[in-house]
Image (cartoon, rainbow, N blue to C red):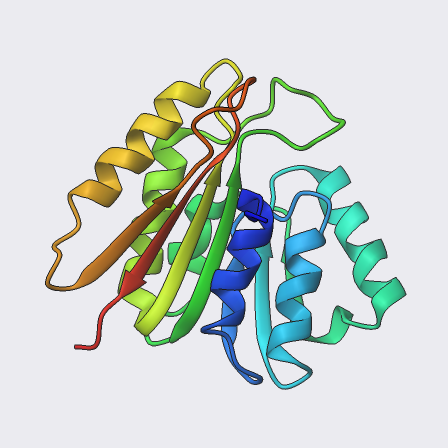
Length: 189
């Protein structure tokens, strides 16, 4: 059976993340990806988790505490556009994940935006180690979602093929704008 975009994103991350790695959850939401990443990097690794909403931070902290994964996670109540100032340029990241759109069961007016997503992608690319991956799961069936999808598509298509491989994954016969997954992988330098 074909995997959903969410499950496929986890498959793609499992292939490149090892114990002790440093990774980013650019949109922590309810903490599902943050917890998944924390398990993969183990107690010697580090997960930077970003979200602008206090509710996301509280939900994620609760989940991590319940699972005993809080030690290896740095929770940041700020937008992913601040990656540039939070993570040193010398820091080597093995992976990052975005779920672009809005926090489920919350204010649908608070959405990720193309300009901040681009800033985050620019900051992540220079920190991504060879064979590292950036996963973007784009939920675009809301106001502003099409603009962000266009940005991610254009950004991904313009990456030089000598340096990056880019994959898209989507179900094309489903209703209600199913999410589209993008995977950017840095090639060996």
